[in-house]
Length: 281
Ligand code: TA6
Image (cartoon, rainbow, N blue to C red; front, side, top):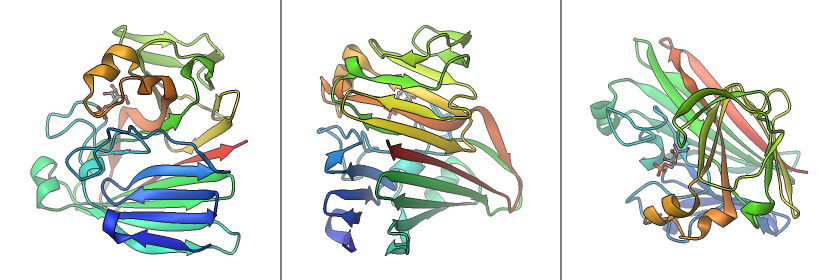
């Protein structure tokens, strides 16, 4: 099976086999689909815009150079609402993995918001039973800059009530819904049953996060993304988002590896390489 570039839809599809593929949209370099063993692993809202009018609601949006509300521009920064370029066509490696590389560099638009020179290089690798997304942030300017970065992964679940997420035990977190900070997690396996929006510090160490439902078990491991955001909008917040299916919260959970509780400082010429690997167990 080869790989194809669907220029009409501004997306690239990586084909490992007829029932194992991934699709990346050039808008935001957003992975919008990952099918493993014939089953879709990512959540994509049926109301999501993929015409470039707003960030894609689902898949793996890229958050850079700022996680959360931002005084210089849109929430979560400009990476997920920019058109990226393919710099390495989809390629089948000797071990069977299929990879592609996309890139985003500063331009007038980004410099108007954030006056720094940067290069983002994003490599997506599809294996028989795993997906790896690796983001390299390079400071191509002559001054240091600081940022936060996050992979905003939306996992598809058959039923949120039967989904358990582990890897947070003992981690301190800030809770955007309760308005608390520095609470320590006492639950080994979290079952999301309400609006949850937490930034866990130093989470998923060393073994990663297990996202399990009766149907599938996914293991998320990460490099240089010390924090993990756990989010589900639940009923009210889902209904308040025009691009989110009203009942979509029943079929998704966001487990988002990020470098967000502290700002990362990059000196001129320096690169941060961060990645997540999601394996179907
Ligand atoms: O990752 C969690 C979060 O920061 C939530 O607070 C919520 O705002 C979510 O991201 C989605 O943000 P968006 O800008 O995509 O609507």
